[in-house]
Image (cartoon, rainbow, N blue to C red):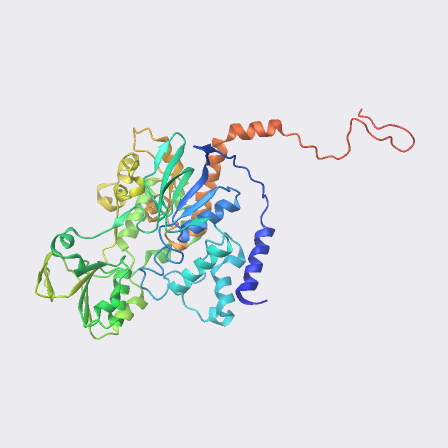
Length: 481
């Protein structure tokens, strides 16, 4: 047996060897005639998969993962991501929880061979999605696809969760909810107000859209934004035969230094969360000020086309469509046929439908920390202010104990917890901290049950009944002194 079949056999063996302790310990709860979930995980991308696997390994058994996409379309990798390769080093680990046969390297080597891995620079995004698909299958995680989550409602110490699918709406109950909803999972994709005001929808797309790039063949394409996704979409449009692609950056200079390379160390990834708020704020404002540059591969992908141009220091105030052309108001720019927005996302919990009933109680950084004037940063101030286990905290003066049972494992956790579920680099340490926190909170919440269970425990282990001992050799019965 070779290849993936042999690897899957090795996975099964490693899971068996490391299963101890394998005893269920979380008591069952019932509500409205149904079993209450210990944890509902919203999102079956990389963060949701790693979280569910870790929960089940800790014998927190009543877990369900839901995702509104079909299998294989969770997360960005096979949908709207357009880079050729990941931006993280190929040796990254995380979802495997330390099991060698579940690592990306083990999967890649089993599929393509050892020489292919040695010659690999970075893992392609489609291979990463294929790895996650395999991981989901081999770990047999309980996932319900094509299912949306409605507004979470706190009822006592439980969450009432509407699930909407093609079968209609149903309600499940959960003790804990983990939001593993990705890069935009604590807000929404950002579209400048002037775009929706001035341009018909067919004239613009966002980098987060699922774009048919064939429509750009022979077209003049304007790209607003200078992040990696903007360059990746520009490169894809050029490869699809666009007549010209002009990328407009609001910055006067592109960032050159990538702070993520500095962050890829155990100290930051594992221990950043333990810093005091002022140190966290210093580090985060520095990271945001530096910004993340496009990769060299993404830049060269565009620059090799003679019909590509980069414009910096551009500020647009509006646009008008005249005939077949878009004309931009503000910094001078040639007319275009279509606009691609690489404008990122905003952190705004009020725009999350699952938080419709609770967002007004959730603390954000501006509620809990006031930085020095020279370090003011309105964007960072809008991020949720989280506890070490990724659970939400109430705004000062609010009574909202239910928020301690709601965990955010999205990019929105970054100022509080560092890189986590929405970043491949952060999963190795962050997933363990999240799941340890959930397990500890369930244990403490059920402490009465566990104490009673121990006091009632009376399962004899010694086979010989001491009350009627056999005589020892020589006819003397054994008795305690």
